[in-house]
Image (cartoon, rainbow, N blue to C red; front, side):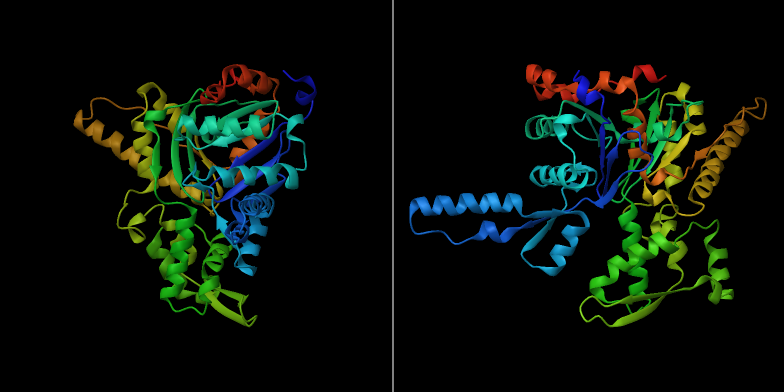
Length: 430
């Protein structure tokens, strides 16, 4: 182990479909949360060919070098693409999986050198991955980290395990539970037993934060609100983050809005990006209808109609029978789209109804002779669940066991990228 690198805090980078969280181990919050997007200047790659053979090669070579240098990430990338047509946006991660490795390498480059401003050769790295990532992707990640950035050590952690680690305190180290990770591009329900993901029971839901934004955008458009088309998605995203909440009964909520519109309808004011003229609109039913798509998906999608509580129940029921009670007792929320007010209460209530109905049905089948012990259902909500995965990584990368579990540069040089296919779980933690 590189003792000088081990004496410095590890770098923790959680790459999500929508946003990337990055910072140093031991901190409570990430240093930066930026959109996972890259803007590359395509004009260098489309330069006219020279007349001579040598000139042609030189022009192409220098164009490639300039394209490698002239790119932006995060908010800056979005701003560049709006102000100049020569910059094309690339989203390297789609539905939790890296789709464009060139863009991903560029993204990591700026994360390390421009944002965190550290030398990668001086720090161990903890990166995260989606639970259904193929092992080949881990090899590509290992190659980039060890070859391009020359890192001394690398640990690739599964996001739900880190989210579970974020939920525990020093007095209670519980590494068995179900992680409900609702990100921007995908929702996963992942059961974890003693720190190991039960892969066969993972459930995926094709509704996530971006769908809530699209639904709010659609509702406001259908109502004829005065929002400029080019700004409508961004307005819908801000409405989602500022005003949306989860209701207990959708019909009662409609009635409350109709009875006291002044109390529930919120005004929205903005400036048109193209002309700079101010505009205003109202935010009404979409405040509670947006998050409702997790509990009644049929109002948004014709292809998927299973509510999130039913998916969690199916996930636990497909897990080994001796883990089920422990899984129901520790359902941990993770991701920005679980931050809606009362989301955890609604989830716990609906899941408890499903579990209690099953117990009643089984008792009725047995003629009431056998009384089943009630099952405790507990949905854990905590203030840092927005970046729970990153915080869990920060906690684990602060422990001495982390450095022992990392793959080192020496191991990579001896055995190759295949070492990255598996990462040991921290045995010393529990």
